[in-house]
Image 1 (cartoon, rainbow, N blue to C red):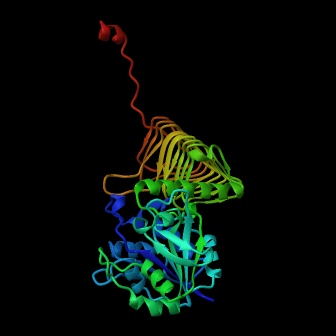
Image 2: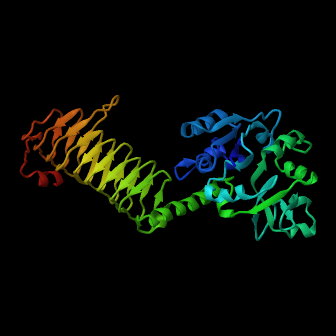
Length: 428
């Protein structure tokens, strides 16, 4: 049997206190809506995201990553509310799983048990120690008998600790029959998905429930909850990486985004940040270094280094306080205090402390090309565009403004002048 998935992503999320739509707030480098669509794609080939608030912005984020996900805009003027969101969808398959776009920790494995339950409706539920404020799900331990809001619950019903978690599975035929019966006869004048449950129970349709993990199915409604969700996802990411052989020193101090890839035997020391779609193979990232959208193979980075986007390192050592951006280094040593931007540097080359590639003239960026076995002395400025050929040397303190031929020494210094007796004269 095939399943359709509808992801509700129409809300503004006013509790986030942000101009950014709630589902576009990021966790571990990717938007919340991205995480849930990625997991939904593992169990269904018919996925619809229902959007409304800043719909074009949300739609673009979705379509940039998921070409097969249908994005529809909710008719909020005529059909507001969660029930209205379902009305906007057009699922194709016999079963319809309804998810929320603000549940970034949900996994495909956690969703699969829904698909094995035969019922017209399946409700996800939490069992909480303190259910205060939540709508109670009244059951006979097999099926759902009713859902009652906290303010409407009797004394006995308030003792129930099973509450609605907000994920549903519907038979498509049930939705076709009962969606037209939804009303907005309430104080908010909205159409609610929970009314479908009430209609099903009144019609004596089978309504089952599935207890799920609060940690996995938790919704994010505030910046505080966003941080809690990110902490949990970080634990998940790092646990999986360590199971796969990555060594982490004090993993709680390390931040790794969800798209990062590690291959071979890698070691990440404390305080490191690994961002974007970085790929790290058989390498060591020393303490307090930052890697952003870079490729690192058979190399060591840091401590206290920054590897910026579009950088590729092969068999290279990058030391402390070295920043590399949009550059390819193959078999290079850059041990201290350097900036290497928009450069190609070949094997056997040593970059002295204080070396800078001057790659930007205020309007355009230019490239620095350094060949094999080049020695760059300390405090060198390489004013791009410039090419340093193989087996050449740059004297310390030199500003290089033109190409250096193979085998040459480039030196550019003002002649030193010593003035006798100046110290005593100056300080009297």
